[in-house]
Amino acid sequence: MGYESLRDWIKALDKAGELKRVTAEVSPILEMAEIADRASKSGKGTARAGGPALLFENITGYKGAQVLMNQFGSDRRMRLALDVASLDDVAKRIETLLHPVAPTGIMDKLKLLPMLAEVGSFFPKTIDAKKAPCKEVILRGDDIDVLKFPVLQTWPDDGGRFITLPLVTTRDPKSGKRNLGMYRMQVYDANTTGMHWQRQKNAAEHLRDRLRAATPDEAGQVELMALTAGGTASAAPNTVPQLVATRIRGERMEVAVAIGTDPATTFSAIVPAPPEVEEYLIAGFLRQQAVELVRCETVDLDVPANAEIILEGYVELGELRTEGPFGDHTGFYTMQDDYPVFHITCITHRKNPIYAATVVGRPPMEDTWMIKGVERIFLPLMKLTLPEILDINLPAEGVAHNLMLVRIRKSYPGHARKVMHAIWGLGQAMFTKCIVVVDEDCDVQDVSEVMLRVGNNIDPERDIQFTLGPVDTLDHASRLPNYGSKMGIDATRKWPAEGFTRPWPAMLTMPTEIKSKVDALCKSLGF
Image (cartoon, rainbow, N blue to C red; front, side, top):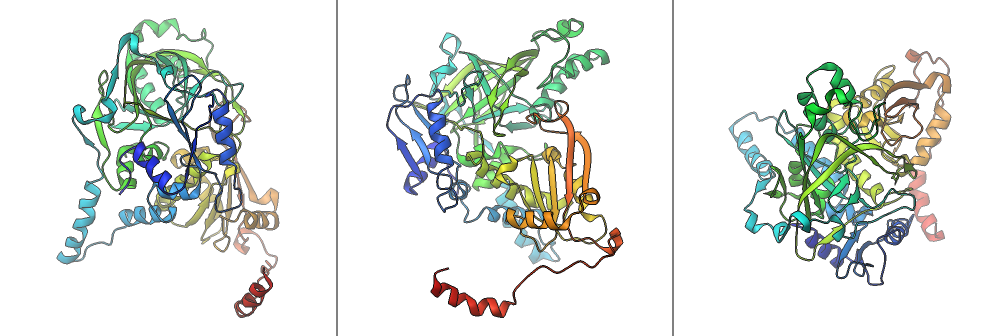
Protein backbone atom coordinates (compact mmCIF):
# COMPACT_ATOMS: atom_id res chain seq x y z
CA MET A 1 0.00 0.00 0.00
CA GLY A 2 1.10 3.56 -0.65
CA TYR A 3 1.49 6.48 1.73
CA GLU A 4 -1.47 8.35 3.22
CA SER A 5 0.21 11.74 3.30
CA LEU A 6 3.40 13.71 2.79
CA ARG A 7 4.18 13.15 6.47
CA ASP A 8 4.00 9.38 6.10
CA TRP A 9 6.28 9.69 3.08
CA ILE A 10 8.82 11.75 5.04
CA LYS A 11 8.85 9.11 7.79
CA ALA A 12 9.50 6.43 5.17
CA LEU A 13 12.34 8.45 3.64
CA ASP A 14 13.88 8.93 7.07
CA LYS A 15 13.61 5.22 7.89
CA ALA A 16 15.18 4.27 4.55
CA GLY A 17 18.16 6.58 5.13
CA GLU A 18 17.10 8.77 2.21
CA LEU A 19 16.45 12.01 4.14
CA LYS A 20 18.85 14.73 5.28
CA ARG A 21 17.58 17.29 7.79
CA VAL A 22 19.07 20.73 7.18
CA THR A 23 19.18 22.50 10.54
CA ALA A 24 21.44 25.40 9.52
CA GLU A 25 19.57 28.63 8.74
CA VAL A 26 18.87 28.87 5.01
CA SER A 27 17.00 31.49 2.96
CA PRO A 28 14.19 30.53 0.57
CA ILE A 29 15.64 33.14 -1.80
CA LEU A 30 18.16 31.23 -3.97
CA GLU A 31 20.00 29.46 -1.12
CA MET A 32 17.64 26.49 -0.71
CA ALA A 33 17.54 26.00 -4.47
CA GLU A 34 21.34 25.97 -4.68
CA ILE A 35 21.57 23.35 -1.95
CA ALA A 36 18.94 21.18 -3.64
CA ASP A 37 20.67 21.58 -7.01
CA ARG A 38 23.98 20.40 -5.58
CA ALA A 39 22.29 17.49 -3.83
CA SER A 40 20.53 16.41 -7.03
CA LYS A 41 23.83 16.37 -8.94
CA SER A 42 25.80 14.51 -6.26
CA GLY A 43 26.76 10.86 -6.49
CA LYS A 44 26.62 10.92 -10.30
CA GLY A 45 27.53 7.54 -11.76
CA THR A 46 27.03 5.68 -8.46
CA ALA A 47 24.17 3.87 -6.76
CA ARG A 48 23.58 7.07 -4.75
CA ALA A 49 23.13 9.26 -7.82
CA GLY A 50 20.67 12.05 -7.19
CA GLY A 51 21.69 12.79 -3.61
CA PRO A 52 19.36 12.74 -0.60
CA ALA A 53 15.92 14.19 -0.03
CA LEU A 54 16.20 17.41 1.98
CA LEU A 55 14.02 18.65 4.84
CA PHE A 56 14.86 22.26 5.68
CA GLU A 57 14.01 23.02 9.31
CA ASN A 58 15.48 26.49 9.88
CA ILE A 59 14.25 28.90 7.23
CA THR A 60 15.10 32.58 7.28
CA GLY A 61 11.99 34.63 8.07
CA TYR A 62 9.77 31.55 8.67
CA LYS A 63 10.19 30.38 12.24
CA GLY A 64 9.10 26.78 12.71
CA ALA A 65 8.42 26.18 9.00
CA GLN A 66 9.69 23.12 7.12
CA VAL A 67 10.33 22.63 3.40
CA LEU A 68 10.80 19.28 1.63
CA MET A 69 12.89 19.22 -1.55
CA ASN A 70 14.42 16.57 -3.83
CA GLN A 71 11.90 13.99 -2.59
CA PHE A 72 11.83 12.20 -5.98
CA GLY A 73 15.47 12.84 -6.84
CA SER A 74 16.88 9.34 -7.32
CA ASP A 75 15.95 5.99 -8.84
CA ARG A 76 15.63 4.45 -5.39
CA ARG A 77 13.29 7.18 -4.13
CA MET A 78 11.10 6.95 -7.22
CA ARG A 79 10.75 3.21 -6.51
CA LEU A 80 10.02 3.94 -2.84
CA ALA A 81 7.48 6.60 -3.82
CA LEU A 82 5.57 4.13 -5.98
CA ASP A 83 6.28 1.18 -3.64
CA VAL A 84 7.82 -1.05 -6.32
CA ALA A 85 11.08 -2.97 -6.68
CA SER A 86 11.51 -1.63 -10.22
CA LEU A 87 9.76 1.13 -12.17
CA ASP A 88 9.09 -1.50 -14.82
CA ASP A 89 6.84 -3.24 -12.28
CA VAL A 90 4.36 -0.38 -12.69
CA ALA A 91 4.38 -0.92 -16.45
CA LYS A 92 3.75 -4.65 -15.96
CA ARG A 93 0.74 -3.90 -13.76
CA ILE A 94 -0.62 -1.52 -16.39
CA GLU A 95 -0.13 -4.10 -19.12
CA THR A 96 -2.05 -6.68 -17.05
CA LEU A 97 -4.98 -4.30 -16.83
CA LEU A 98 -4.78 -3.38 -20.50
CA HIS A 99 -4.49 -6.97 -21.75
CA PRO A 100 -6.46 -9.28 -19.46
CA VAL A 101 -6.81 -12.87 -20.63
CA ALA A 102 -10.19 -13.22 -22.35
CA PRO A 103 -12.45 -15.50 -20.27
CA THR A 104 -13.46 -18.71 -22.04
CA GLY A 105 -15.66 -20.17 -19.30
CA ILE A 106 -17.33 -19.50 -16.00
CA MET A 107 -14.13 -20.22 -14.02
CA ASP A 108 -12.12 -17.75 -16.09
CA LYS A 109 -14.79 -15.12 -15.50
CA LEU A 110 -14.69 -15.75 -11.78
CA LYS A 111 -10.91 -15.29 -11.85
CA LEU A 112 -11.42 -11.79 -13.26
CA LEU A 113 -13.57 -10.69 -10.31
CA PRO A 114 -10.65 -9.93 -7.95
CA MET A 115 -9.04 -7.75 -10.63
CA LEU A 116 -12.29 -5.86 -11.19
CA ALA A 117 -12.73 -5.39 -7.44
CA GLU A 118 -9.15 -4.13 -7.16
CA VAL A 119 -9.66 -1.58 -9.94
CA GLY A 120 -12.90 -0.46 -8.28
CA SER A 121 -10.98 0.26 -5.08
CA PHE A 122 -8.74 2.79 -6.88
CA PHE A 123 -11.50 5.33 -7.57
CA PRO A 124 -11.23 8.44 -5.34
CA LYS A 125 -13.66 8.83 -2.47
CA THR A 126 -14.95 12.01 -0.81
CA ILE A 127 -14.81 12.25 2.97
CA ASP A 128 -16.42 14.57 5.53
CA ALA A 129 -14.65 17.92 5.91
CA LYS A 130 -14.42 17.40 9.67
CA LYS A 131 -12.13 14.42 9.05
CA ALA A 132 -9.86 16.17 6.55
CA PRO A 133 -6.42 17.17 7.91
CA CYS A 134 -6.13 19.91 5.26
CA LYS A 135 -9.02 21.74 7.01
CA GLU A 136 -7.30 22.10 10.39
CA VAL A 137 -6.77 25.82 9.70
CA ILE A 138 -9.09 27.86 7.45
CA LEU A 139 -8.15 31.37 6.33
CA ARG A 140 -10.45 33.83 4.57
CA GLY A 141 -10.57 37.52 3.73
CA ASP A 142 -7.71 39.61 5.11
CA ASP A 143 -6.11 36.50 6.64
CA ILE A 144 -5.24 35.18 3.18
CA ASP A 145 -1.52 35.48 2.48
CA VAL A 146 0.23 32.86 0.36
CA LEU A 147 3.57 34.36 1.39
CA LYS A 148 3.03 33.11 4.92
CA PHE A 149 4.53 29.95 3.42
CA PRO A 150 8.26 29.87 2.44
CA VAL A 151 7.73 30.12 -1.32
CA LEU A 152 11.07 29.90 -3.12
CA GLN A 153 12.90 31.99 -5.66
CA THR A 154 15.10 29.42 -7.38
CA TRP A 155 17.21 31.39 -9.89
CA PRO A 156 18.60 34.96 -9.77
CA ASP A 157 16.75 36.35 -12.81
CA ASP A 158 13.38 34.80 -11.95
CA GLY A 159 10.46 37.22 -12.04
CA GLY A 160 9.84 36.57 -8.35
CA ARG A 161 8.92 33.70 -6.09
CA PHE A 162 7.29 30.64 -7.66
CA ILE A 163 5.23 27.78 -6.30
CA THR A 164 7.01 24.95 -8.08
CA LEU A 165 5.25 21.75 -6.98
CA PRO A 166 1.51 22.62 -7.08
CA LEU A 167 -1.27 20.17 -7.92
CA VAL A 168 -3.79 22.28 -9.83
CA THR A 169 -7.39 21.02 -10.09
CA THR A 170 -9.77 22.30 -12.77
CA ARG A 171 -12.99 20.91 -14.21
CA ASP A 172 -13.84 20.23 -17.86
CA PRO A 173 -16.93 22.39 -18.51
CA LYS A 174 -18.24 19.90 -21.09
CA SER A 175 -17.73 16.53 -19.39
CA GLY A 176 -17.52 17.67 -15.77
CA LYS A 177 -14.39 15.58 -15.25
CA ARG A 178 -11.68 16.82 -12.93
CA ASN A 179 -8.17 17.40 -14.21
CA LEU A 180 -5.05 17.46 -12.07
CA GLY A 181 -1.99 19.16 -13.54
CA MET A 182 1.27 20.70 -12.37
CA TYR A 183 1.83 24.27 -13.53
CA ARG A 184 4.23 26.72 -11.94
CA MET A 185 2.67 29.69 -10.17
CA GLN A 186 4.45 33.04 -9.82
CA VAL A 187 3.38 34.80 -6.63
CA TYR A 188 2.39 38.41 -7.35
CA ASP A 189 1.14 39.34 -3.89
CA ALA A 190 -0.67 37.90 -0.86
CA ASN A 191 -3.69 36.62 -2.80
CA THR A 192 -2.81 36.52 -6.52
CA THR A 193 -0.47 34.36 -8.57
CA GLY A 194 0.19 33.57 -12.19
CA MET A 195 -1.11 30.32 -13.65
CA HIS A 196 1.32 28.96 -16.23
CA TRP A 197 -1.18 27.10 -18.39
CA GLN A 198 0.76 26.35 -21.56
CA ARG A 199 -1.44 26.46 -24.62
CA GLN A 200 -1.59 22.69 -25.20
CA LYS A 201 -2.34 21.69 -21.59
CA ASN A 202 -5.72 20.41 -20.40
CA ALA A 203 -6.37 23.31 -18.03
CA ALA A 204 -5.76 25.78 -20.86
CA GLU A 205 -8.34 23.93 -22.95
CA HIS A 206 -10.83 24.14 -20.08
CA LEU A 207 -10.27 27.90 -20.06
CA ARG A 208 -10.75 28.15 -23.82
CA ASP A 209 -14.00 26.16 -23.61
CA ARG A 210 -15.34 28.70 -21.14
CA LEU A 211 -14.17 31.55 -23.34
CA ARG A 212 -15.94 30.02 -26.34
CA ALA A 213 -19.15 29.75 -24.37
CA ALA A 214 -18.86 33.36 -23.20
CA THR A 215 -17.90 34.66 -26.65
CA PRO A 216 -20.22 33.22 -29.30
CA ASP A 217 -19.14 35.38 -32.24
CA GLU A 218 -16.25 34.05 -34.29
CA ALA A 219 -14.22 37.27 -34.41
CA GLY A 220 -14.24 37.57 -30.64
CA GLN A 221 -13.18 33.96 -30.21
CA VAL A 222 -10.21 34.41 -32.53
CA GLU A 223 -9.03 37.39 -30.50
CA LEU A 224 -9.52 35.64 -27.19
CA MET A 225 -7.83 32.43 -28.24
CA ALA A 226 -4.74 34.46 -29.12
CA LEU A 227 -4.71 35.88 -25.61
CA THR A 228 -5.01 32.73 -23.52
CA ALA A 229 -2.27 30.67 -21.95
CA GLY A 230 1.07 31.68 -23.35
CA GLY A 231 0.47 33.73 -26.44
CA THR A 232 0.36 37.46 -26.93
CA ALA A 233 -1.67 39.43 -29.42
CA SER A 234 -1.66 43.01 -30.62
CA ALA A 235 -4.07 44.19 -27.95
CA ALA A 236 -2.91 46.24 -24.99
CA PRO A 237 -0.98 44.23 -22.38
CA ASN A 238 -2.99 42.47 -19.67
CA THR A 239 -6.32 43.28 -21.33
CA VAL A 240 -8.65 41.65 -23.82
CA PRO A 241 -10.02 43.30 -26.98
CA GLN A 242 -12.80 45.77 -26.26
CA LEU A 243 -14.97 43.88 -28.75
CA VAL A 244 -15.47 41.09 -26.23
CA ALA A 245 -14.33 42.52 -22.88
CA THR A 246 -17.82 43.42 -21.72
CA ARG A 247 -19.13 39.93 -22.50
CA ILE A 248 -16.72 38.09 -20.24
CA ARG A 249 -16.20 40.59 -17.43
CA GLY A 250 -16.91 38.82 -14.14
CA GLU A 251 -16.95 35.34 -15.70
CA ARG A 252 -14.83 32.98 -13.63
CA MET A 253 -13.25 29.55 -13.81
CA GLU A 254 -12.85 27.85 -10.43
CA VAL A 255 -9.43 26.46 -9.52
CA ALA A 256 -8.01 24.66 -6.48
CA VAL A 257 -4.33 24.02 -5.72
CA ALA A 258 -2.86 21.40 -3.37
CA ILE A 259 0.71 21.65 -2.07
CA GLY A 260 2.32 18.76 -0.24
CA THR A 261 0.53 15.47 -0.92
CA ASP A 262 1.53 11.82 -0.79
CA PRO A 263 4.14 11.02 -3.48
CA ALA A 264 1.86 8.99 -5.79
CA THR A 265 -0.70 11.80 -5.95
CA THR A 266 2.00 14.40 -6.59
CA PHE A 267 3.53 12.23 -9.31
CA SER A 268 0.15 11.56 -10.96
CA ALA A 269 -0.14 15.29 -11.72
CA ILE A 270 2.68 15.04 -14.28
CA VAL A 271 1.64 11.73 -15.89
CA PRO A 272 0.43 12.39 -19.48
CA ALA A 273 -2.92 10.68 -19.02
CA PRO A 274 -5.70 10.74 -21.63
CA PRO A 275 -8.23 13.52 -20.84
CA GLU A 276 -10.94 10.96 -20.06
CA VAL A 277 -8.87 9.36 -17.26
CA GLU A 278 -8.76 11.30 -13.99
CA GLU A 279 -5.36 11.71 -12.38
CA TYR A 280 -6.85 10.87 -8.98
CA LEU A 281 -7.69 7.42 -10.40
CA ILE A 282 -4.09 7.08 -11.62
CA ALA A 283 -2.90 8.06 -8.13
CA GLY A 284 -5.16 5.39 -6.64
CA PHE A 285 -3.74 2.82 -9.05
CA LEU A 286 -0.15 3.80 -8.22
CA ARG A 287 -0.66 3.74 -4.44
CA GLN A 288 -3.02 0.72 -4.56
CA GLN A 289 -5.69 2.53 -2.56
CA ALA A 290 -8.17 5.30 -3.21
CA VAL A 291 -7.21 8.94 -2.76
CA GLU A 292 -9.40 10.62 -0.15
CA LEU A 293 -10.84 13.92 -1.36
CA VAL A 294 -12.71 16.72 0.39
CA ARG A 295 -14.88 19.53 -0.97
CA CYS A 296 -13.36 23.02 -0.96
CA GLU A 297 -14.76 25.85 1.15
CA THR A 298 -15.31 28.49 -1.55
CA VAL A 299 -15.23 26.62 -4.90
CA ASP A 300 -17.06 23.56 -6.19
CA LEU A 301 -13.98 21.34 -6.47
CA ASP A 302 -12.51 18.42 -4.54
CA VAL A 303 -8.93 18.31 -3.27
CA PRO A 304 -6.72 15.73 -1.50
CA ALA A 305 -7.91 15.61 2.11
CA ASN A 306 -4.42 14.83 3.47
CA ALA A 307 -2.66 17.68 1.64
CA GLU A 308 -0.54 20.08 3.66
CA ILE A 309 -1.87 23.26 2.01
CA ILE A 310 -4.88 24.06 -0.19
CA LEU A 311 -5.33 27.29 -2.17
CA GLU A 312 -8.88 27.90 -3.44
CA GLY A 313 -9.85 30.53 -5.96
CA TYR A 314 -10.60 31.40 -9.53
CA VAL A 315 -9.25 32.67 -12.84
CA GLU A 316 -11.25 35.49 -14.37
CA LEU A 317 -11.82 34.89 -18.07
CA GLY A 318 -9.72 37.13 -20.26
CA GLU A 319 -7.55 38.53 -17.47
CA LEU A 320 -3.84 38.15 -18.18
CA ARG A 321 -0.68 39.34 -16.49
CA THR A 322 3.01 39.17 -17.33
CA GLU A 323 4.65 36.07 -15.88
CA GLY A 324 8.33 35.19 -15.73
CA PRO A 325 11.20 34.99 -16.43
CA PHE A 326 11.67 31.57 -14.80
CA GLY A 327 14.74 29.32 -14.66
CA ASP A 328 13.31 26.20 -16.26
CA HIS A 329 14.08 22.49 -16.63
CA THR A 330 15.62 23.13 -20.05
CA GLY A 331 18.59 24.78 -18.31
CA PHE A 332 17.57 28.16 -19.74
CA TYR A 333 15.23 30.89 -18.59
CA THR A 334 11.70 30.87 -19.94
CA MET A 335 11.10 34.49 -20.88
CA GLN A 336 8.16 36.68 -19.96
CA ASP A 337 4.74 36.11 -21.46
CA ASP A 338 1.12 36.78 -20.55
CA TYR A 339 -0.77 34.15 -18.58
CA PRO A 340 -4.03 33.89 -16.61
CA VAL A 341 -4.20 35.24 -13.05
CA PHE A 342 -5.24 33.09 -10.08
CA HIS A 343 -7.16 34.89 -7.33
CA ILE A 344 -7.11 33.15 -3.94
CA THR A 345 -10.42 33.18 -2.07
CA CYS A 346 -9.49 30.80 0.76
CA ILE A 347 -6.47 29.00 2.19
CA THR A 348 -6.79 25.85 4.27
CA HIS A 349 -3.88 23.92 5.73
CA ARG A 350 -2.74 21.45 8.31
CA LYS A 351 -1.31 22.71 11.58
CA ASN A 352 2.38 23.45 11.10
CA PRO A 353 2.21 22.66 7.37
CA ILE A 354 5.20 21.24 5.53
CA TYR A 355 5.81 23.10 2.27
CA ALA A 356 6.85 20.95 -0.72
CA ALA A 357 8.98 22.46 -3.48
CA THR A 358 11.37 21.58 -6.26
CA VAL A 359 14.02 23.37 -8.28
CA VAL A 360 14.43 22.76 -12.00
CA GLY A 361 17.41 23.65 -14.15
CA ARG A 362 20.27 22.04 -16.01
CA PRO A 363 19.92 18.24 -15.75
CA PRO A 364 20.34 15.99 -13.95
CA MET A 365 17.94 17.27 -11.31
CA GLU A 366 14.96 15.91 -9.38
CA ASP A 367 12.66 16.05 -12.40
CA THR A 368 15.10 13.79 -14.31
CA TRP A 369 13.97 10.88 -12.14
CA MET A 370 10.32 11.87 -12.33
CA ILE A 371 10.58 11.86 -16.12
CA LYS A 372 12.06 8.36 -15.97
CA GLY A 373 8.98 7.29 -14.03
CA VAL A 374 6.72 8.85 -16.66
CA GLU A 375 8.70 7.08 -19.37
CA ARG A 376 8.12 3.65 -17.78
CA ILE A 377 4.40 4.28 -17.23
CA PHE A 378 3.86 5.78 -20.68
CA LEU A 379 5.51 2.83 -22.48
CA PRO A 380 2.61 0.32 -22.17
CA LEU A 381 0.17 3.04 -23.23
CA MET A 382 2.29 3.71 -26.34
CA LYS A 383 2.34 -0.02 -27.09
CA LEU A 384 -1.45 -0.04 -27.30
CA THR A 385 -1.18 2.00 -30.49
CA LEU A 386 2.31 0.95 -31.52
CA PRO A 387 2.94 -2.68 -30.47
CA GLU A 388 6.16 -2.72 -32.50
CA ILE A 389 7.76 -0.43 -29.89
CA LEU A 390 9.87 -2.52 -27.50
CA ASP A 391 11.35 0.24 -25.35
CA ILE A 392 11.90 3.99 -25.15
CA ASN A 393 14.39 6.23 -23.37
CA LEU A 394 14.02 9.91 -22.52
CA PRO A 395 17.62 10.86 -21.66
CA ALA A 396 18.13 13.51 -18.98
CA GLU A 397 19.82 15.85 -21.45
CA GLY A 398 16.72 15.70 -23.65
CA VAL A 399 14.68 17.37 -20.86
CA ALA A 400 11.63 15.16 -21.58
CA HIS A 401 10.56 16.75 -24.86
CA ASN A 402 13.75 17.31 -26.84
CA LEU A 403 14.87 13.70 -27.44
CA MET A 404 13.27 10.26 -27.46
CA LEU A 405 15.18 7.06 -28.25
CA VAL A 406 12.94 4.28 -29.56
CA ARG A 407 13.64 0.55 -30.02
CA ILE A 408 11.35 -1.24 -32.47
CA ARG A 409 10.81 -4.63 -34.06
CA LYS A 410 11.13 -3.62 -37.68
CA SER A 411 8.77 -5.52 -40.00
CA TYR A 412 8.54 -3.60 -43.27
CA PRO A 413 10.17 -0.84 -45.32
CA GLY A 414 9.67 2.63 -43.86
CA HIS A 415 8.63 1.21 -40.51
CA ALA A 416 10.84 3.61 -38.54
CA ARG A 417 9.22 6.63 -40.22
CA LYS A 418 5.76 5.30 -39.50
CA VAL A 419 6.71 5.08 -35.81
CA MET A 420 8.07 8.63 -35.78
CA HIS A 421 4.87 10.12 -37.18
CA ALA A 422 2.71 8.02 -34.86
CA ILE A 423 4.62 9.27 -31.81
CA TRP A 424 4.17 12.87 -32.95
CA GLY A 425 0.44 12.14 -32.92
CA LEU A 426 0.34 10.75 -29.36
CA GLY A 427 -0.79 13.31 -26.77
CA GLN A 428 2.09 15.13 -25.07
CA ALA A 429 4.58 13.12 -27.18
CA MET A 430 3.68 15.53 -29.99
CA PHE A 431 6.24 17.93 -28.50
CA THR A 432 9.19 15.57 -29.03
CA LYS A 433 11.74 17.57 -31.00
CA CYS A 434 14.01 14.68 -32.00
CA ILE A 435 13.16 10.98 -32.31
CA VAL A 436 15.83 8.33 -32.92
CA VAL A 437 14.62 4.87 -33.98
CA VAL A 438 16.87 1.81 -33.70
CA ASP A 439 16.55 -1.95 -34.23
CA GLU A 440 15.44 -4.42 -31.56
CA ASP A 441 19.00 -5.57 -30.80
CA CYS A 442 19.99 -2.08 -29.60
CA ASP A 443 19.56 -1.19 -25.91
CA VAL A 444 18.08 2.32 -25.91
CA GLN A 445 18.88 2.72 -22.20
CA ASP A 446 22.55 2.65 -23.26
CA VAL A 447 22.97 6.06 -24.90
CA SER A 448 26.51 5.19 -25.99
CA GLU A 449 25.18 2.17 -27.91
CA VAL A 450 22.48 4.32 -29.55
CA MET A 451 25.02 6.93 -30.64
CA LEU A 452 27.19 4.18 -32.13
CA ARG A 453 24.22 3.03 -34.22
CA VAL A 454 23.31 6.56 -35.28
CA GLY A 455 26.85 7.40 -36.30
CA ASN A 456 27.27 4.19 -38.29
CA ASN A 457 23.81 3.38 -39.63
CA ILE A 458 22.57 6.61 -41.21
CA ASP A 459 23.05 8.30 -44.53
CA PRO A 460 22.00 11.78 -43.33
CA GLU A 461 20.17 12.89 -46.46
CA ARG A 462 18.29 9.59 -46.75
CA ASP A 463 17.58 8.81 -43.10
CA ILE A 464 16.65 12.13 -41.49
CA GLN A 465 13.00 13.16 -41.59
CA PHE A 466 11.84 16.74 -40.93
CA THR A 467 8.31 17.85 -40.19
CA LEU A 468 6.47 20.89 -38.83
CA GLY A 469 4.02 20.97 -35.96
CA PRO A 470 3.36 22.01 -32.36
CA VAL A 471 6.39 22.30 -30.09
CA ASP A 472 6.70 22.82 -26.37
CA THR A 473 6.09 26.37 -25.14
CA LEU A 474 9.51 26.24 -23.44
CA ASP A 475 11.31 25.70 -26.76
CA HIS A 476 13.15 29.01 -27.17
CA ALA A 477 14.76 27.95 -30.47
CA SER A 478 11.57 27.35 -32.48
CA ARG A 479 10.75 29.79 -35.27
CA LEU A 480 7.49 30.80 -33.57
CA PRO A 481 6.10 30.29 -30.06
CA ASN A 482 4.51 26.83 -29.82
CA TYR A 483 5.22 26.00 -33.50
CA GLY A 484 8.34 24.72 -35.20
CA SER A 485 10.16 21.83 -36.81
CA LYS A 486 10.90 18.33 -35.53
CA MET A 487 13.39 15.70 -36.66
CA GLY A 488 13.31 11.94 -36.88
CA ILE A 489 16.42 9.79 -37.42
CA ASP A 490 16.05 6.28 -38.83
CA ALA A 491 19.09 4.45 -37.43
CA THR A 492 17.76 0.97 -38.24
CA ARG A 493 19.46 -1.39 -40.68
CA LYS A 494 18.40 -0.55 -44.23
CA TRP A 495 16.72 -3.18 -46.36
CA PRO A 496 16.87 -3.79 -50.12
CA ALA A 497 13.16 -2.90 -50.17
CA GLU A 498 14.19 0.54 -48.89
CA GLY A 499 16.54 1.00 -51.84
CA PHE A 500 19.71 -0.19 -50.08
CA THR A 501 21.39 -2.82 -52.27
CA ARG A 502 24.87 -2.95 -50.71
CA PRO A 503 25.80 -5.65 -48.15
CA TRP A 504 25.05 -4.62 -44.54
CA PRO A 505 27.92 -5.74 -42.27
CA ALA A 506 27.45 -7.62 -39.00
CA MET A 507 28.36 -5.94 -35.72
CA LEU A 508 31.34 -7.20 -33.77
CA THR A 509 30.44 -9.78 -31.11
CA MET A 510 32.34 -12.46 -29.23
CA PRO A 511 30.92 -16.01 -28.98
CA THR A 512 29.05 -16.72 -25.76
CA GLU A 513 31.30 -19.65 -24.78
CA ILE A 514 34.40 -17.44 -25.01
CA LYS A 515 32.75 -14.77 -22.88
CA SER A 516 31.78 -17.30 -20.23
CA LYS A 517 35.30 -18.77 -20.12
CA VAL A 518 36.93 -15.36 -19.78
CA ASP A 519 34.47 -14.08 -17.12
CA ALA A 520 36.21 -15.91 -14.27
CA LEU A 521 39.68 -14.89 -15.45
CA CYS A 522 38.75 -11.22 -15.64
CA LYS A 523 37.21 -11.40 -12.17
CA SER A 524 40.49 -12.73 -10.79
CA LEU A 525 42.30 -9.88 -12.54
CA GLY A 526 40.00 -7.33 -10.91
CA PHE A 527 38.23 -6.03 -13.96
